[in-house]
Amino acid sequence: MTESKDSREDDSSVRVALRVRPQLAKERIDMCQVCTTVENTQVIMGKDKSFTYDYVFDMPTQQETIYSDCVRILIDG
Image (cartoon, rainbow, N blue to C red):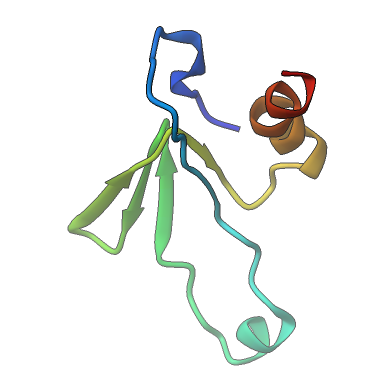
């Protein structure tokens, strides 16, 4: 998991989370390459494009981590 902006004061009502999914079996068989890199709250695609989100989770992130970091606060209110 990477850092989130949640610890900072932010009064916006919309937050965006991104999870980079693992490759599918077919993608691995076809020798497809992963073209994303996760750095803190940024996703870098290829060599020259980057996108910033409130939360960014890389491939090995467990579902429980995503839930506790992004969803629990919405449910608990």
